[in-house]
Length: 410
Image (cartoon, helix red, strand yellow):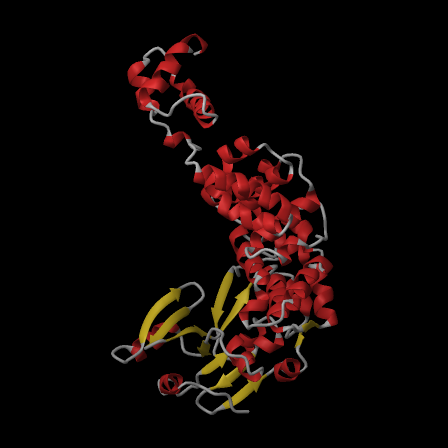
């Protein structure tokens, strides 16, 4: 079976008399007549030898991962990831990363470590022929995801493969073979062992799976329902095994849409502690990103609960544009109500932030040495409240006089 290969890859194969193979998504996608996908190449030659062979050639070589024996090879606008044939040894804890990597010169041993039959099809560039050890071409034609060997062996040591399986099903519109799905349910608990950042990366790809190859949005629905069917959410620290998806289908930012669906299902007593714990532990977010996401979500829920306009925009004025789009997917009435006040603030140039006051903490310090600096924030917010209501001009002298009048309170 012939697969289209670039002239640069043909040129590269001349450096590999042992045979150079393209493997994985590129081969699968060519069989499906889908454009796009990373180009992964492999052979029995170790990376040190590959680097020597390509020295002085038109190909640029850079080590990508020394532990797993991978290189990035580039020429013009093409980039490939090269790995030498290898075997992998895992701990029985589902944590994704193998504890030991061993080189091999046998393609059969390299193929065993791969996950699904459709991703285990090798294309021999030198000979223009497929090496299909696990009938992946048949499964590709039948649009079926099946583990290349016993699914219990494939999935018990690598929880990330379960999320990859869901992603592939969504991206390609494939069904899951019965025994493979059964093993995924059995070992879904391995998701608890995956680092948060890796889990988030796969979940984000799942949320946009229909866009990868311009598929129908129904592919997203199938992928998310599959996460429910496998019972994966309980291993993201949630009480529920299944989520009722609503907002994720409506929002442009599907991550925020999913988080709203999760919150609506979990109904946490404290939104802030729940969001911070979930994003940091389950998704590996840093504090800055966590705080930003929490602000968007808090602004969304505060609007739904009817927080008064002034209090609301003192907190969310700078983030309103983002919150606005979220509310539009839930309630146009609430969105329009708050947006009217937002526009009023802008049109009348109302002072809405402490930073817009004509005095600062330094002014308080320089003029009122006896005021404890722990009170500065309270003082400035009181002044902001009066300026916003039109009870006090936003002028430095007037603001300082107001502080003077209320010194006994500080």
